[in-house]
Image (cartoon, rainbow, N blue to C red; front, side, top):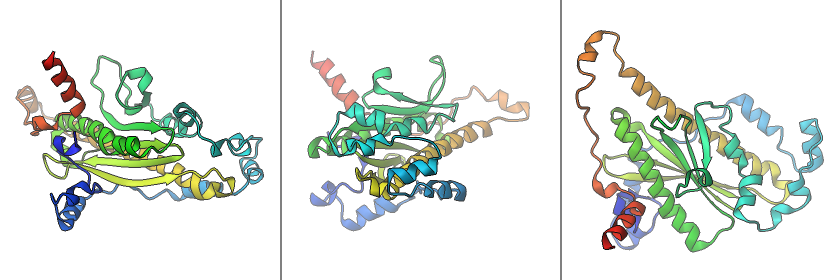
Length: 292
């Protein structure tokens, strides 16, 4: 099913204008309404540190690091060849996994450990007896395959992101206008950053924030690898900020006076989430069950 069946709108999807569902003007309005910013300014010290590695050969990189380092992915020309998905995840995109190592309350989990429909999830680190918020989902492909890659970026990731956003809104309805979740797709040496927000109560909007590609040529190390490092930093900052918003919202609900305890068990107002917002993956399973 097209994501529109789950009330997901991707302003970059040409289907809407091709079949005259929306005009170009209307699509631009959808894209810009209550537009959020998902790119933060780098701290100067971090930017200056990264720029020290804006070099073009392994010798200069070793000198900058002031310690021996093989830089074997470049010297063996391994980046010039095609590999399996696991190769890219363990040798190139592990930097996204390790970016959250210093945040004790967050963890990156691979699909093999959770049985999830996507390859990676960034979520709260809690014991199994507590509800866990999820903030970012990732999908990997070893190479660009037009139909499969477009389907995962245009259908699979948006559906997963919508489900995550539904869960955040359901338990944090007071700040639902400010909430967003994120998606990352690795396709070989290319990384794409997506964000999903809800500019209106029923519609999930997919924002294509940016895409970056690592070059297999070491002379382009500074020009291509450093922007990817910056992008991973940006993803990390967005997840941290979203977690902080939720924590602040829940903390503000506490009352110093005891009167709030008289109403703490009252039913909370619920943000309306229509049944059509359910993920098509779960709907299809239900339909299969009903047919049996």
